[in-house]
Image 1 (tube, rainbow, N blue to C red):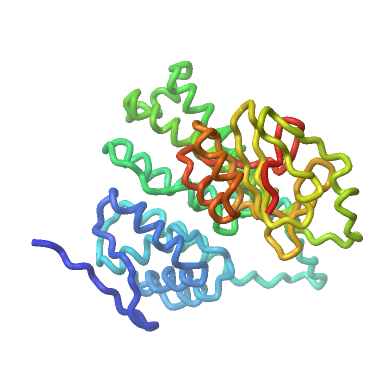
Image 2: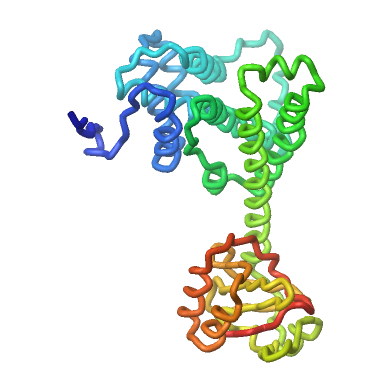
Length: 368
């Protein structure tokens, strides 16, 4: 008989909230739903509801409600899932108890000091704040890795995407730090375990077969690629979204140092001055068959500084390799901007991160 979807009623009304069936296979999917739909305030409420359900003393519940510590959201989502499904699973109880203890202990009143002179409270510097935040991020990612490991052992495709997770208010500094953590700590250990050069690491990962270990190494390598890609994107967004207080230079002055390919066989570049103020441009490298589409992110259009393009929208940029340029280039050269953009979007090749630079190998095919 087909199971009907359960509708959860909250004080805010009806919400399309998933109900966990208690299996590890569905755990990542439900956790991802909460990560996209809920925030830190919801996480605090879920932790507090679980504490009341667990029968904690009133003084501890009060300390928990007044705690200003940041909640590890993956633990809060798990509390909510256990409450909704009325599950009595004990395999996550130690993590939940540890999180409750951490939040409660952080709000304990300080003992009164008999000294007259009260020392000034030491302020936490920026680097310590970054380390604390990084520890929280790594805790959430490692929680997802536990579920991914279970999926690998059961030959199930994991649904967690670190690339999507990093887009949710993770700073450019932390994306680099997360990448370095996996690059310098996790990946070398896995490679040593795979090569069987360390007995301790080989024994630690003996619960995985050689094929499963290879799959897990691929997951970590993809994590590093996702972190580096998001780091580049976020860094470019910081640079190109800055408002300039300088006087705007003329188009001729802006493109004075710009190097580009004037012509190649039957293809010719449009004047470089047309880049300045344009809504979008299309560049093409005849040797590598790489085509790049840039679209501005404001009403003033694109601008140039040296050999770098400014004021373009990272999310709308496309950088692809044309397998059959003779079929695609006529559309790019003759159609309007929207049609040319859609034509590039339909090209079945991987979209790479554009550098935002123009060099002597690129033709300026179009400037809209």
